[in-house]
Length: 168
Image 1 (cartoon, one colour):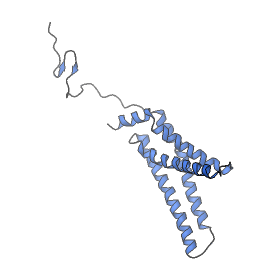
Image 2: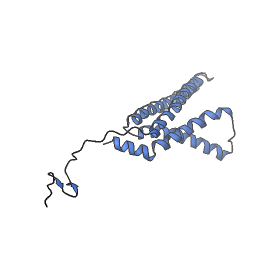
Image 3: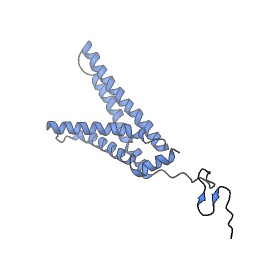
Image 4: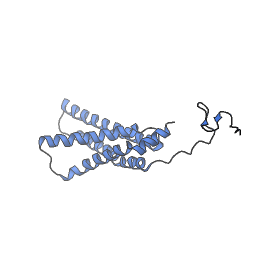
């Protein structure tokens, strides 16, 4: 009783090591829901960073003072606007990278930065005993929370597996 196996294959063990697979490549997996949700949750923080940066700069332009003091205040406002615009740019590129499956880090960096600022502010206020509710605190709380949830989702096992599969 002789069983003839195709070249490069053992009759009982399948393909020999080092031989290329002969079957068709599997179709690319669909984008996990957690990646879609993570991308959508980062849209409000982008909008808030943009609005906050422009509003802070405009407030600094309207600040009182003259001479060197005015230049310093406007310079600080321009610096904060530059940081806000950088976060907006990085988050926008991160959304694009996450959506196409290129890299999770592109979205994790701005989400982590936003969430980190949220945590630092909350811890500082708690340490100083100054944490009390004001209606203006709702927006930063929501934005920080959304960034935190987005960060958790983009680092979840289904998202990591999808990114690893897309990297081949």
